Length: 119
Image (cartoon, rainbow, N blue to C red; front, side, top):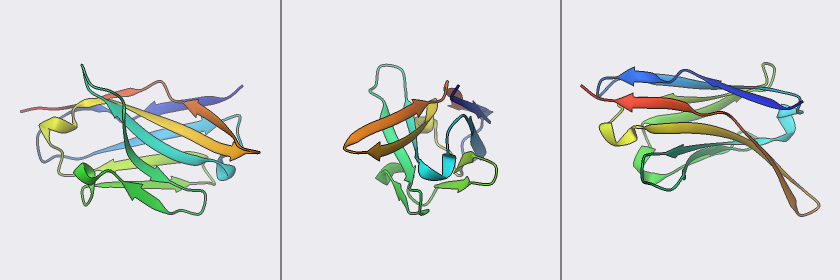
């Protein structure tokens, strides 16, 4: 059974930091890319950051220089370090483990974790 369990969300003041974790089980984590999405009320889900199986990273412009995505294959876990948080970063954050095989996308989602940035 595949599970992605997120942790690390919470309430933080503007300018603060949080680190989200996404612990996976039931998949060969080193063969999956990991994406982080977020969804604020009334908005569509937005891709925030990606890390490939080789460790290459990519970010949406609004978080560049503030967020860092990483992975620890030995722990089957992905991370999203969020610094200099802003109120507009408030959202539910989801991790997504994915791979392509013979043209088909295989993906699994975490349950989501709430991040609230407010004074």
